[in-house]
Image (cartoon, rainbow, N blue to C red; front, side):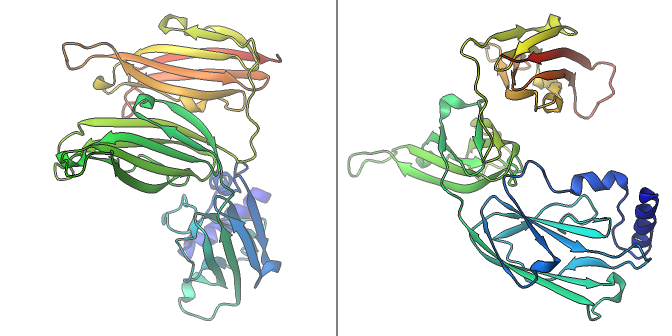
Length: 385
């Protein structure tokens, strides 16, 4: 009966032009259990000043009444300071709206605190089809955001190209790369590669190497700084190019994978005699038994020049097997031939007892059902040390 009521209310909302949420829509919009800190705000907090830190989440829970047939929803009013608060993306038609969905007479709005400062959240309880009509109720809270306590800084250099690092929310990742801007070349972040909700870019800087006065053509070091904001996995991707050569591939590139854990996440301590189990292309279908702290390393043939790559690495149960590395290395190619393949290395660490299945597919992303795809599976049982 509960689902029947929810679906009926959703039907009313759709008829009125508001968003409609079915059972499949509900789960993604619930508060994220992996968030470093969630500050819950309810109807009774109206008018209050709420203190928060950068990297935390504000979740506003409001009373909502669609069960009686009314299509009233809490709608956001103008005035929020978007440099301080970022509404989380919605799965609905308008991705700029806060994530919100009615559940048992409640509606939720979720914001990420992304910078220090003050911001006001103002909501109105109204019928969406009444346009500028007077809302039945108003709600507002003031958010005062402070910088999070300084975390550690992880520095990556040219030798770390292709590496994977794990940090906590609040930590900083710096990438320092040699450069010479007198040649016209400079490093720049590649567009749409880094998820700003996980790792926020704080920009770059350039420092010329020490040199005699009057000397020209001196190189230097470019530094790019990123702040770990919230749990998740993303990529840092940089290219060394002349900005005006828009259609030309970068002369050099740098890539690193960054895994962000919650600020209070306990580090996994490997056993002093931890073992690494190495598997190759012929080991698909095998079963392994690992102890907590052991690792399983897969080294598999791959050739991205064909469009094929190994996928679904992150679909493994990360509470049992934590993905620590996903790296591709091209085979030696002294003749600079094109179309040369290489090896993909994938490493998982056993973090708690249980059974998890590594289920990978070598595929072209746009051909998920192709008969040419290759599946690779390994079943891993993790036991206590």
